[in-house]
Length: 118
Image 1 (cartoon, helix red, strand yellow):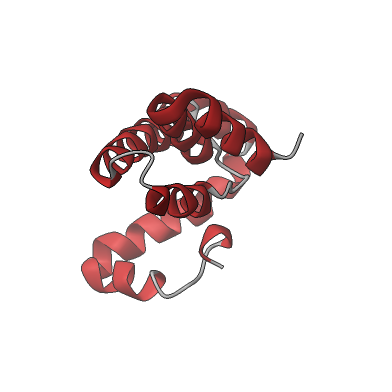
Image 2 (cartoon, rainbow, N blue to C red):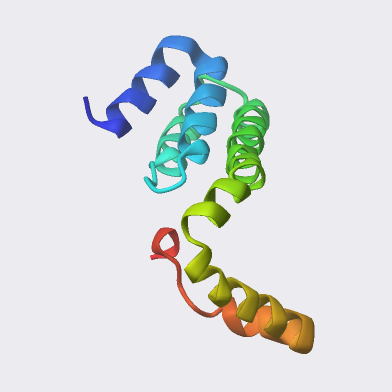
């Protein structure tokens, strides 16, 4: 089953809870972008649900979903350090640049597009 079909069926079957779950799933994936924004944009004009409630449930799901990446990163640091200790110099180099140039470096790096931004 296609991921977008799964998200759409969650929303159709479970209403606002489906929007919450679809948003949570779409934002919890670290490497696979899912089209939750498009699904929400298709649902909002139908007037089946209050647009404020759609935004609220989608935002709650997205917040919790995005937090999973943080917690995986925080808990998985030791695993990465053991397995990829040779490549950690690159991360240390970036950390030094942020410490040295601060906000300007972050602004400069924000102009580099990531996979999900394209």
